[in-house]
Image (cartoon, rainbow, N blue to C red):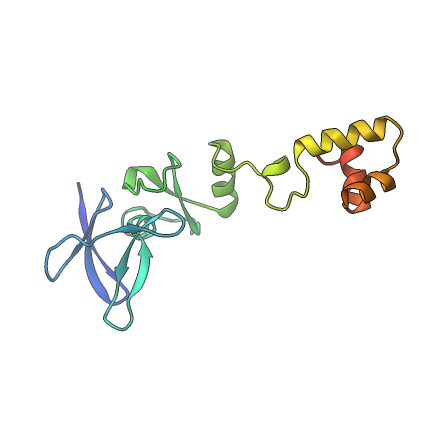
Length: 159
């Protein structure tokens, strides 16, 4: 376990490679809590100017060189709570998103897409109606969906 001092928002802290953060004045470990996205954070800075800081970013800035100037920190094992220095790497946004899809953290295809208007079962039902001779306009009116949405679904452009 290596230790390094780092200045965060005007205050010095001692950071370890195992994601621990200590106060340089008291020597006590700073408590960390997960933020809304599940990343461990701690409050840093002087009174009146304190801010929440994500631990993995501070650890990466302190221990991992970034010669290419990549903007984001990736967790190699896809575990947001594992901010050990061996689990972190600097990446581009594109590399970070690609890693998320590769390890199953993101799947925005079909009805998993936040902008999806139709479920898979609903599309199957509409395709059956279309194959039986019902027009796209009639299907759209029946289910109160836009004509283009229904047309794209029954023709197989979207699922």
